[in-house]
Length: 199
Image 1 (spheres, rainbow, N blue to C red):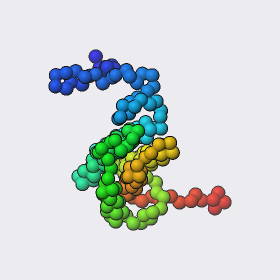
Image 2 (tube, rainbow, N blue to C red):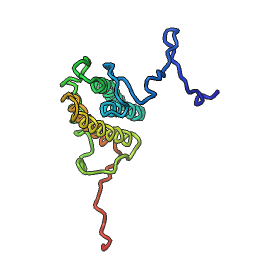
Image 3 (tube, rainbow, N blue to C red):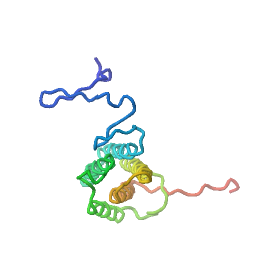
């Protein structure tokens, strides 16, 4: 039997086989961190689901990066995104104890300043064609997923309480990923207005 033919998967923990599937979501409902049941397309699920997508996207970028310091930074970000996702997955965010703190936002700001200072300042804040190499491209993809996560969180904030700390963290994170991606570009390909057909 091929691996791809195996539909039901099991995990063995301490000699006990635990089934991954629960069947509880077969009718389009899922459980939040606090046990509440909601539809799988609920805006809260969209928000923390996009954070989960961002973590995975960053995993791709991390495995393309040679610089160990940046790899460690990306892994730190992935770890702290679990805190963001956990808080979003709890209807009363204050009940989620391992929350983002102001100093975590400060850490991202320090990395933003670091990479902005190190990046090629030629057209530093102009629109560019992203992705002159694989690392920069992967970081730009992560940046755009981060922006989408922020938009989903803004939508959630219209109907529920979303802590300012995680809103600020995700906003700074998109800037941090932009700075990292720009720093990693091999070349800066600025966007120029197309020439008129009369020229």
